[in-house]
Length: 196
Image (cartoon, rainbow, N blue to C red; front, side, top):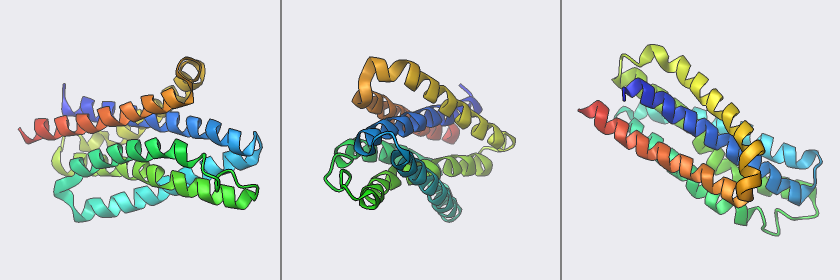
């Protein structure tokens, strides 16, 4: 498999997993807040804030540590899975279930911020790697974003039409975590292939 195809596959699966998380957390928070705007605000706010901060920090880290980009990308993907494993238990914490909506929203946002920041950092790390170390992939960086968005779109469709019914919330979360682990392993394979 060419490195360019592997790049696209990695960001596709990463985007797929990200939407599984978002929709799963949305369902979990519906149980906490009900179906009102609070659950949507907590998840959407955490996602936008986390993605933005992660992209900023990932971009800065990439410019200072150019030799460790693929490892950093893999660590981000594994960290997403780790924080996601903690999230379901934490979202059942009394602070998340607080009768004070602001307390519950702030706590839920704090729980979701670490994995969403890792999501935001991952794509800039991989894109920077491609531009610096694989000149053939540099013109294709825009296609990484397309592949990531396509993965997210497919993830949302598969999640609501298949996974929630077949696996439930925890099973869907585990499927997303497996996706992140596969992406991390793929990054290590890419590192070996491009180093050869």
